[in-house]
Image 1: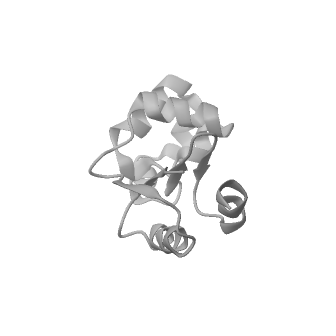
Image 2: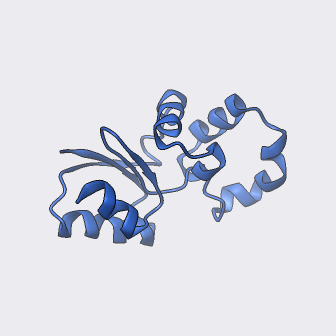
Length: 118
């Protein structure tokens, strides 16, 4: 079962997640979130598949999120506008994102990953 691993290589959480995938011999496609930003359509599909609120896809601890004052601005934006914004820059997206046939995981929580993959 191959999964899509969308990550930022310099991110320590992403590095930990990648080591976890390798240690568990999970077949994955590695995708650099800044070089190949998720599209609006992908983000929309992932959000639906994950069942998570869209705000969970935002990298709230990121510099760009803070610089753009999104904490205050998101509540006044439509879901479509939020998706456009996420699709505009990979650094706004919480990472890593792990996409499988029947799941989407955002961030790295080992217990969730074990449940989905092992």
